[in-house]
Amino acid sequence: MFIVHVFVHVKEDRIEDFKTASVENAKNSINEPGIARFDVVQQQDDPTRFVLVEVYRTAEDPAKHKETIHYKKWRDTVADMMAEPRSALKFFNVHPDEKGWD
Image 1: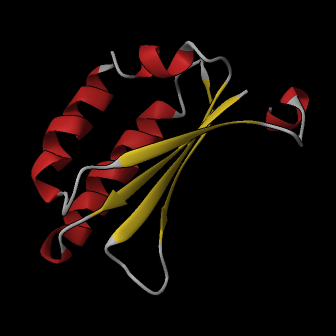
Image 2: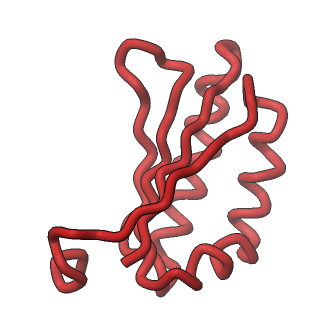
């Protein structure tokens, strides 16, 4: 498994727009064969901060995801909503193993 946490800081007046666009993208993304999980979470004490938790089956699957129509739509839609450039950290799973993500 290949796990990506994308950290997003959204402009305060664009929070709801970002949530709408991101949930739509997540719902479409989870239907991709290379994605096991795609979560959108919002920070409790600062609602302008989000983390996208993306769990891919292989290290090649994020590149495939970035070629989808729904990702490109999300990317273009949220571009002006960002308070600063988004960043990401990449992880490998320790537990559960691959069978635990099905």
